[in-house]
Length: 471
Ligand SMILES: *[C@@H]1O[C@H](CO)[C@@H](O)[C@H](O)[C@H]1NC(C)=O
Ligand SMILES: *[C@@H]1O[C@H](CO)[C@@H](O)[C@H](O)[C@H]1NC(C)=O
Ligand SMILES: *[C@@H]1O[C@H](CO)[C@@H](O)[C@H](O)[C@H]1NC(C)=O
Ligand SMILES: *[C@@H]1O[C@H](CO)[C@@H](O)[C@H](O)[C@H]1NC(C)=O
Figure: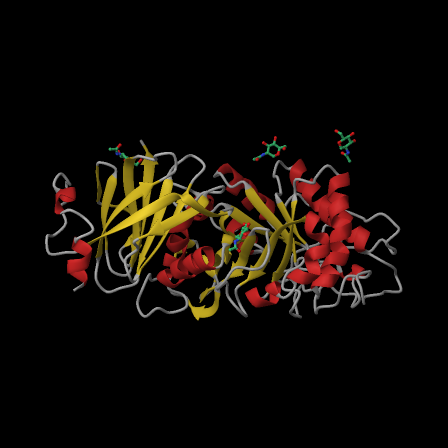
């Protein structure tokens, strides 16, 4: 039944000159990429090395450090991630996995200048940033989990509390909002001095949650009370090109619920950010700002390096699907995993450190199927004719190349032909397909091109990205 309908869509002759003819009995589906139907712009895909995970990386031997960095950021031997999320420290010390503050000691009063101590390392995050930049990363998101304790109602950078001076948070020491804004701007300046451009700045992490590590509570209204000071402070420092991100809530719906309270500072906001823990991105947020999913992971599952076995939380294909849902159904412009590289037996990272070994998971390659080919500035475009069970999306990059993603969730392979329409008569001049499944990590997959129509056979339980270069 399925075969009869689909065969009508593509004349068999289309394969006549194909070097790898598809089996005659296999039905073929024609997917059309509509370059004139445009959706959101993409900022990228990424991860973090916060909470001294960068320090763990730095303890690897030099060659393994380079291998780990390549796995994350290289566009030829790794996932080609394009966003790095750094943690701005708030702790008075570096014990355990604490991120140390750039002004650990209180000046005594918010009217006195902050006492900065820049160590040129930032828990090795500066090094990871520089290495990422070397490999082409241009989007560095610096995010503070909390203000230093002396700026907060609870006098501690951990255990929640609020920034002194926002509504409902008064402190005998005074209003610390301007001091916190100065502090964040100084962090950006320290990085600039070291040659790294921070492009996005955040001042909250999971403000809807109190934890025993760095954490600070905030409502949308309280965030607005601070953004109206941070925005002008960036402007006065000639740093208005640094975008303000908010608010990295623990889940999607929590962030959606804060949007109304942020409307008064709309002119200062760059990007709306949320994590995927308590609820994951399923539908668009009601905002004109780009929306990023900035932290997701299988935090506790035992280390799983496989692509597909039962659809478990740590499997690569599960993450390929999650990215698809976020980008296609929830209008996300970026999607970040929690940690890139670290030790330990859980799936909270993409790449595991085991002794001096660096072991990639298929989660990394799932990210690579997107990130290597859907580059910052790409625009999502329409697709029609997608085969049932094969999640299909497409993007046009700034260099003109079109990247088409296929996630075959079914148990049979899918024979597809792909053509482009619109886009000022975009004519396909080269088609190259890349596959990740249980036995491939972003390997080249056979495909063919015949008169502007590409043909590719997408194996069951695989993700294939087809890159169409303009003629
Ligand atoms: C950082 O910003 C400066 C000034 O805008 C620019 O000249 C430089 O090229 C940027 N560096 C990178 C790596 O983007
Ligand atoms: C910002 O730029 C203006 C114009 O170039 C300059 O006059 C001013 O001193 C700069 N301010 C800072 C804080 O760098
Ligand atoms: C998707 O996000 C863009 C900003 O990146 C916004 O302009 C657009 O309105 C959003 N679309 C929907 C359907 O929410
Ligand atoms: C298409 O591009 C790939 C990857 O860049 C290259 O290896 C291949 O030779 C190109 N094919 C043609 C026909 O230009």
